[in-house]
Image 1 (cartoon, rainbow, N blue to C red):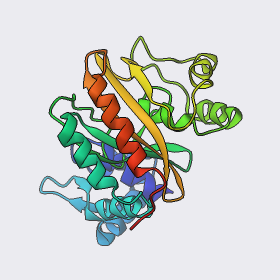
Image 2: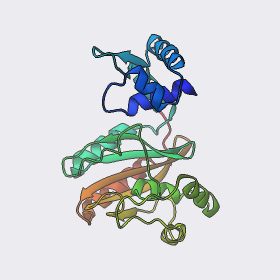
Image 3: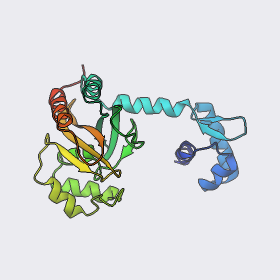
Image 4: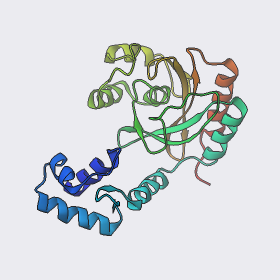
Length: 237
């Protein structure tokens, strides 16, 4: 657990960290920090740079690829994402719940969508404020939905973010898995997103897209719905 804390601290830092800083931030004795840092460097999880500080090593990237490979995504998922982005000009996202957390598994960028730094492959994002998250929440029973939101909280990303469990339940209760779900400025100001859940490779997934402004083009919504239908029920091939 101490080694993992070091990896998390170094990976999240915008600049290399000296061992003394690592020890202080991780609340470790300096000798313990030196020992763990040397071991992590040997295993490839940390790298010492010229100024004596440490940055994340290739071992972290390798574990990321292992994680992405372990998420058995539906067949044709990558091809469908590319087609959706090419046809609409908007970014396409694939997400799922992994151990109760909403994770972006893949994305293809489109020029007509804004850059959303938190919706990148491998990153955990918010279920209550994103369209892909809300689409996946429709696949859960009411009690499981409430439990997940309670566990992870409902952070206000913008003034429009729904932060009360009763409000999001009222929004999602009439919806069924496979229905289009939209959010307007709840995750980022002046950005709207749409998502739709589908079943593939033995679990539920969500396909999503984003657009600048507070309205989504109807052709984009139609293509998104067709893309999800194309993936529905597919297994790895």
